[in-house]
Length: 477
Ligand code: NAD
Image (tube, rainbow, N blue to C red; front, side):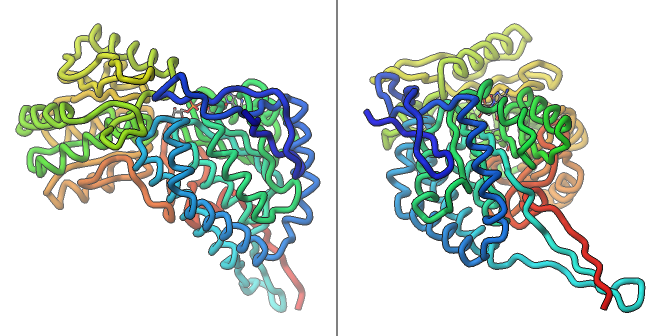
């Protein structure tokens, strides 16, 4: 098997490699991917630093053409790259192809943004002086990504970084190097100058930590767990560097008595269990008012019985495997914790066997949970959700907001009054009315509050907040 190498200073390099394993079929090696050392990482940072002056002054047409070419190629290869994504991460094929299309759309969007870079000209309060406000690139951006969106998250960080004139050192998650390698290869062939985008695959403790410790990164954009996010923050403060964190969630989905039952059940099933519950925007707290509680639990349980858990590549599969053995253990540990805490296991909870050896877990629903239980407070990141019974809307809102996180919050209701009040008062970066808590557009801001996020929003034109720095210039006329 050939080794997919790291890209440093425009050269493919690296001979030590690790196997990328398919979680739907652990006998299948998806590919061999190079593992970068601390020295490789330092070389990548040096290359990005050297490439910055020229790239930061490159023409916007050049950036547009490269980003557009990359978007077009990803779109043209959506089925092939989608299948790779499904094989390395375990998302079912339609979700994996959908995520690949989204990555292509993100590149198309920022190809357009490159042509829309603009500043402001403002009169000074003093006579005969003009003021110009412009956005300039930051410098070298370190990009560190998680495993659960192997192509969309790298795309929504790499595309704006390059669009605004930064150079990049990119470290994907160990479990899913395949899609990252594919988009770096595409961008490299699309004509990026040497050193503008560097790929260093490998361990967080080595590659990631070397990035955090480097004085030469001007910004780090990170998506991943809260624990690693805190390390990124501490190291970035040490180096007086800009940083952006997207971390965990414990997203509430409120279901009110007046909800359309079908809408509520579809939204809850999607939010809690699609993509194997491995989305930061997944809802694992279903907060349901008394009048609809029993009907909702019965209908959701019925729906869960129809969902097929199996190999991500099978057309009949609704839920693919958990990403790896470690995450499966975390999920089953939390299922035990839920039982011990006194929540009632209403559905699932078992590891299941399929034709291929993989990490298959039944979608798992607890009822009679309280918001104080660990299963309601800590992010599990698997197909496990709990129903919390509440009296009325006021208690539902208070319960929804009683969490250290604040990424996404959903409500199922036919009441305009409650929907409007919830949109204004949910303590979350994103609010969904009669929609799943997960599933967002690529051209509008993404991000959360409280323990979920830190720094400017990602995606859409708001991405400029992180990837640029503002300059105010005064000129005597
Ligand atoms: P993780 O924190 O373990 O890893 C994320 C990345 O950080 C990986 O590339 C990893 O190699 C790297 N890393 C690990 N140790 C490091 C270190 N010492 N220095 C620098 N980098 C290091 O997270 P994960 O398990 O890959 O991802 C799951 C988490 O991501 C969940 O908590 C999930 O909620 C979160 N997530 C959040 C969002 C969001 O937008 N809020 C989106 C997707 C995932």
